[in-house]
Amino acid sequence: MSARTEIRFTVNGTERAVPAYPMERLLDVLRNELGLTGTKEGCGEGECGSCSVMLNGELVNSCLVPVLQAEGADVRTIEGLAAETLHPVQKAFLECGGAQCGICTPGMIVATVHLLRSKPKPTMEEIREGLNGNLCRCTGYTRIFEAVKSAAQAMSSDDLKILAAAPEKAE
Image 1 (spheres, rainbow, N blue to C red):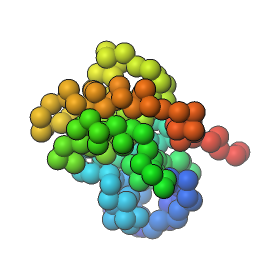
Image 2: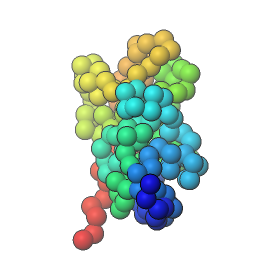
Image 3: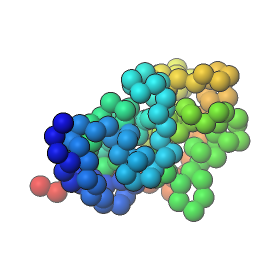
Image 4: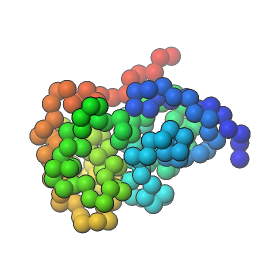
């Protein structure tokens, strides 16, 4: 394994420099080095979406991303969605019962934010497609889909700011 090196990236709007092995999983660096334990490990094979984060505005399974790939990137985790109050998507998941055991919930919420960024008023088919990489093993998807619809209706222009695309890198 290569030696640890310093990886620099922005996490939830804050620039960070983290010593890590280049092929170490982004999931492990977020949880173990940065203490961002909101991102959960489900299957560890990129099948369940529990570890979903946004990397430069794209939804990724952080268990499959080597941290070196995050060098210079913008990473948004579940912790980066709420400021002083819950983000409308988080609030909708709580109000609609979309948050169940908690393992899939952070990934579902990050995937929902990613979906609403491109489809502010998604159809049911677009909701299903937007969340199709995220698995729930508790009780099903009805309440989760209701939460997505509720969040879409509740979103204001201020809420859209956090959904803005990652800033362009200076060259």
